[in-house]
Length: 633
Image (cartoon, rainbow, N blue to C red; front, side, top):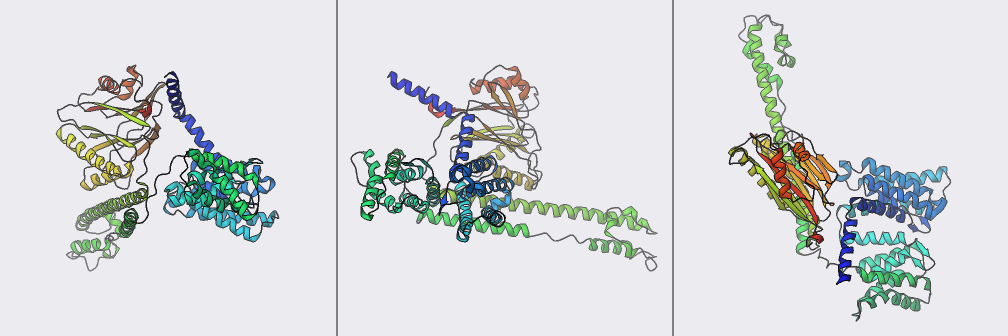
């Protein structure tokens, strides 16, 4: 019992350590740096290959920078002077990812960055060949260009939407790079990884790993045959699970005996990899791409394409222009046709659209007849412009809804093949809200509900004003937001859709939105605000303000006033959502409760100290995440 207690305590301490944001961030940065470092070791025909460039081009921001720095350190480490081109590839790839990775064009056209990366590869090769006397063969030059494009496109696809085929191809490229990393005369990381895949991976992954070893040319044995034979040997129903780890070594001996070629240096790595493969978690059963899942996925993708085409047609459809000359002709007809001086007047031909902006600029001798007609035409022009702008709002709102539906259908199509995979919940939610209204009908609505894929939402909707009307507006808006989020719509699309609806209904400013999206697998949160009061994060070191006040939704489709703030709640931080009837800063500075206080008690204290305006509704919602493994104690 004592040993089990110490083990559980050590496990909890390790979980707390791994959940530290700094530890996780450092591990993530080290992972991207190390991956760039290892991919720089890739070789074909004993020439360095630009797999690291393709890996860098698949990311943006600091991830691309970390991968680029790792590759820039790896090329001189593995290739010495021959790795100078690799340093240039890595630096160019990092710069490319920083300049174009976050642009909308790169997201709409996934092959743009791979094509530019291949172009950089070609320019670099030509520069080194012409000016620095590089002796790379022409066939290898074109192979590098093709490999750059293929690897960048493959890694980009893997970061956007993973599937089994993409994973297998990435595994093959990874083994190709690891094959050049030797930690001693008898330990090769590529061979060890291949041995682990032959015992604990899928058959295509094992075969592609063997192909990567054959392309790396680190041994004369046909490693693809070794991997395939090892996979079939591991299917034998052994009595003990650990007996499967001998499958790669047995397969290697059989292939050496059959071919008459002997290479005993690879056996230790294969056996070690087989032992590691027995520790890998069991693979989930593959879903059939054909049949119901595949058919539904294809239909969703086709439906998304149809809606995208319709959205483009709507955007290209321009309303008819305003006929200003017709308005001026109407002015001439009303003011000049019955004028006694119409035959000798020269001002009729000088009526220009500029007079509709300032009718007093006319030089007519009988301005008392012309100016009123110009003012009437000015009012008509103003009305027509307002109608044209209104039609533009309608068209923009409709095109926006089509775009949201396109993204939603594509997201469903991407998730359908992996619907059987579960996501581990690492945190549980503690949420409590307290509210105080001026009247019986409270204009503030607070909802807390689970969403798909380990998401949890807390929504605070503040109806403008007080009383029954504000309460009805907030309930309708919050109910619509809840249904869309539960259906799987992204939060930004959901709030933009409600904004468009308020614009079309002419009820701008009817409600504000304060939406917290909690990830129960990572412990992070995203705060979406549109017109809502600032929120606060309470930690042991103090309080932090989140967001600023902005205009409420419902005034324009084109102007998006929504703000998004991301933060971590992994270390017990408390997120506080407030309506505009609560002075949060004053209340939080007066109370002395710590983040460990019960959420209900904290919300009641904030409402008691911060509710200074009795003429407005006030609501305080307190949110905290706790590790799910610690829920029992």
